[in-house]
Image 1 (cartoon, rainbow, N blue to C red):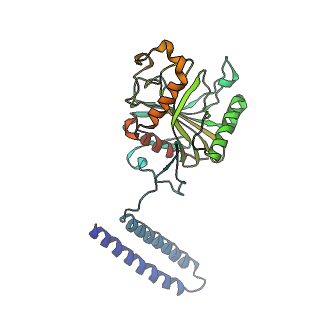
Image 2 (cartoon, rainbow, N blue to C red):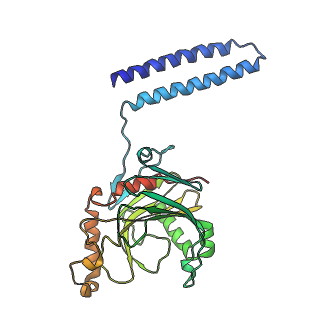
Image 3 (cartoon, rainbow, N blue to C red):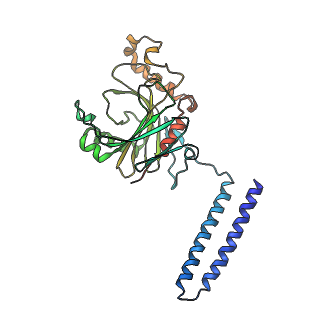
Length: 315
């Protein structure tokens, strides 16, 4: 470490000497010799950049700490984004870049990602289920299997979405209000796309910022009747909006915890009487899953959160 620091200091001194020499040369330029002056100025700028790089490398040797999220009540408040977000996952993970959308994921999460343009879908059941043409990322060889939900990330253009599905405007407005107020214990968190099922509960809620937007992540399960919380149906979701309000991000990623049964059918309780005390059961499940450590989930919350933070949408 001392040898590396010495080299960095040495390089910085040499760069500084060169910078001062070239500055003197600029002052001594003959007026009217614009080509020589321009060339010298360009070289000076390059030297300044080199010096800046050396200083940055030297600072990195000091091991400056990176701010982490702070827990507030039942929900995590993510730190303010930096001008250039630093995401360690993009150093060791796999980069996906498709149609001006990019993100990084860990090799342990999936064997690959299929990036496609999902065509517009008009539902025969209700316009509330209409979906616009949008970008869809499908995870292949996902870490967790079998699961009821397919692991995907949707990138919806908001204007196109609301034009064919009036239901979505309320959900988008609700999410924008939630993100502006950031309550510590949010309930009835907005979710898209619309499904023919209801949100049974939500837990492990946290606000997350990505490259050019923000949203909220939580664990949830959807159903049409009283049903045990289980590893086949449980999933991690992120619902977010870009800062300019043009795109809506919906991630649906199955997740599991060893405290849960493998499926609803393997739940050890009495399914015929579950509905009689379902509110108490759900509250107990909420408390149980909040008490679980990050590493107890598969995939881990950190692994999924880092992937969400790496999302960037160029507009």
